[in-house]
Length: 353
Image (cartoon, rainbow, N blue to C red):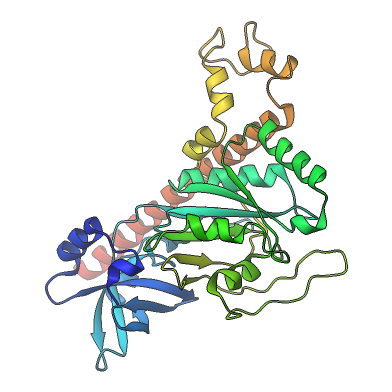
């Protein structure tokens, strides 16, 4: 197998030659389970671990490999195991604020071309959550595509209303409607996927991601569970993994995410809420807060029903959340650096005695 089939392009080849050295090789991370890794090279998949130097120099968890990363490795045990000693620069990424109270980034996956954002037309549908996913995807420089699943559970008229809600919220990403029961939309997804390109599935647990992957794989290679009596799916996927499809496309499956905390995503917010950004440029005052200033184009658009009020309120909410966590993150980094400098000075004095 050529590594180009796993997504290695000419730009990455040049970087690999420079970073991996003459005695190193390049491979792609296909699975991560805590501190254990699986990589794929020209011959197949093998287990890998990080070198001590790699771990020592990593400043945060975002510096560690994630699914989709290209890494420099050294092989041992006749090529049956590998040591990871470097990560090639990521051309795109998915990350979020770590779940819970800890203010830090959590890297999810890297080097993705298209993100399929999956929502069920039944119990899972939520435009505000769609906007959160879009911010995450746009921040990571990934093309978004919306998949509305379980269309067999609602009428065509109800489906049309859901699509209108998405468009009224200013979301312009492409939409594919599909059913894992009838097969509607599956061939359309197959036609979109290109050999050597990487795709991922984002969505809550139970929206049909694993069943969709099995359709694309042409078999039942991944475990699925029956839906509940309400039509809501049950969680199946337990770890992130990169899967090679028969047609040559690469697909990253991952567990459903209950928390989508925003941290340092100002660029993603601007891209996802381009309609708000464009309107704000027509406000009378450049520093308009869009609250009570005269000549506010944003408030005028809301009053004229040209801008969805809920869409704008979510914009404010996500921006406030991101800014708040960003300040906390910067403060935490300052404290970490100050503590590191203190430890370094103490060790230096100790060695001098």
